[in-house]
Structure formats: structure tokens, C-alpha cells
Image (tube, rainbow, N blue to C red; front, side, top):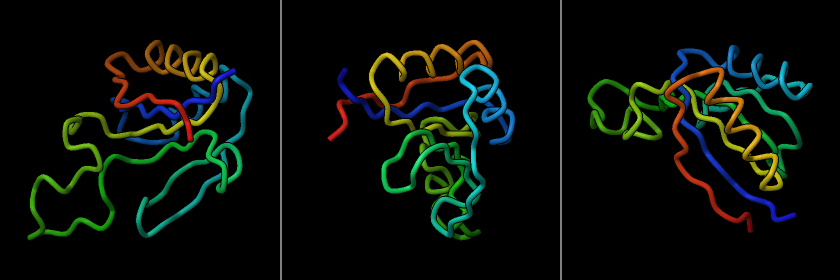
Length: 116
């Protein structure tokens, strides 16, 4: 099965409900992490080989006075407060996409490509 990388923009104000929806559907656990670049995020899998990462769209390094368009990691999705990055076989990426869309109507696929 071909492995893919995908990113989804989710209309949620918090990472926890997104993790709860994925945990309920797939039985996976998420571990809390903190990064000066990503801010708080939740991870399922190994940090060296990304499986599923749930993070806020807002850049934690943005400060007043910085360009307004840099406040978001994905400025095309300012009303989508959460980003979900996933690297899994293509059928699993599709299953995660379906779960996110059902649980959070308005979820948008930002990118999907074959993983390196």
C-alpha cells in the first residue's frame, strides 16, 4: 500500500476534541507535546516517523507587529483553528479524512501527496 502525507484544516478551536474523535473512531492514543515552533500539539506515533499530529493553526511565534498574514500556518484557512498532519497508507488517510469531515463539518484537505 502506498504511504501518503496529508494535512487537513479542521474548524475547531482546540486540539483535544479532534484527538477525541480520532481516538474514538480508531482506538489510537495521543501524547501531548510542546514545541516553540508548533506550540502545543498531540502526537500518535513516533516523532521521527510522523503518523498523526494534531496542532493549532495559529503560529505561536507570531507577535503583535508581525505581518497579519503570518499569524496562521495556513493563512488560507483562518477559520480552521486546528491542523491535522498524517503519514499513513493511503486507505488509512482516506479513513481519517472521512472521520474528520463527519465529526467536524467544513474540514478541508490542504494537501495530499505520496510520502517520500
